[in-house]
Length: 559
Image (cartoon, rainbow, N blue to C red; front, side):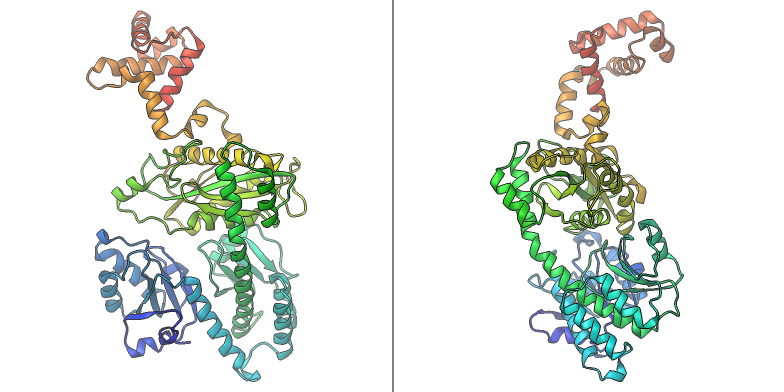
């Protein structure tokens, strides 16, 4: 399939923005969808690149568009397909950059999904391959026939992989996602941990071939053979095409279930901390293929951009999580483009698939974030059962896999909050509130630290200190409490108030010890007594009482 063929598909409505006849005649080897500012490392020569342009802002100037297109050219992309939905039209800066680097530029209307473009390319390539006479196929005719029959009856990727490589002696081969999740492996291939799989994909050893199918930054399929001589390149490409066809049908079935997942999450969000309607909950769980009895955990995920500032996510909390992103103003001030829509949902879905093979529900709702409803085994052995993770295994598993997700999108700060183990589905409404509160705490305690290991996962079970408990309280609530409790000490009009605030903090930090406070501040103990009496007079608290000490300690933590 050539680039120019895309314009001939009336159903897509794709139009040419720039490109000459020679460039439009180049062969398409695959499709990559990305909104990374520098996608070069994810590209393979001959691919077309789909972008929604969420990485670009009208105030960015020409430099950002120039860097993006230069990366496409260096990665061997044969064309750029830019979506019109985000900005309404293709930016002139992008047109100039494509002309300078001789990368054909086509415009995708808002009505056309990137999935439709990917399917069109894949189906055209598969049809052309199928029409070739037998000698042009690398796979033997009997193998192709068997794979076709397996596809028709809905065989899984493991069975397809085993059958595809059987005539080659079944060499070790893994089908892996970008985050290291093993989708399938041949019987001769060893089991890999996710971290081992990621290291394998990043190494120069063996052969890795991307399966061309509509995928996210987290769950793109990679076919990896440790032995480069185990299969001819054309054989690998044809096997990858078979797997792409399976992925296409699998994703269509998954999309059909998405509405049921959204209905369940909407029901639980509306229930808030109360119990949802019993009959409605049972029906929603049944529609998602989830058990009506047993234990659950709820996970809520949010995504922001690094550099968003220390206040990122501080506005989210249990009673008013509001915008789970929580970094809009700071991000705009920093000139950082927001991550693409659905990124938190994609990340949460992939993380959950790492940890369970059982059905789960996942959906993203405005003002809440991405929510996963995961059935778990309440046993404490950490092994789970029948494809279900144990309560502790799920919590710890999310912490293990989260850095791998983060590494796929270094520009986005992923955070997640996890509820306690809920022994009965009737408590799922409360679990959603808990997970949202834990997410707010994760955002507050690690709002914008850089690096793959920085992405935070906080469970409600972790809230074992006053500081961690307050971390999830909405920013406005904390600010109001701080003002009402320490208000007289916060003004800048009197320098002495700053001295009193410092003395209070040291006094509470030394458990109310007059002598140790005086030593730490290098003061006479009588001076400490005087300052603490002033604090008591200004705040109306009695620091000989434990509850008043806790009030002031909580206020200090709210700063």
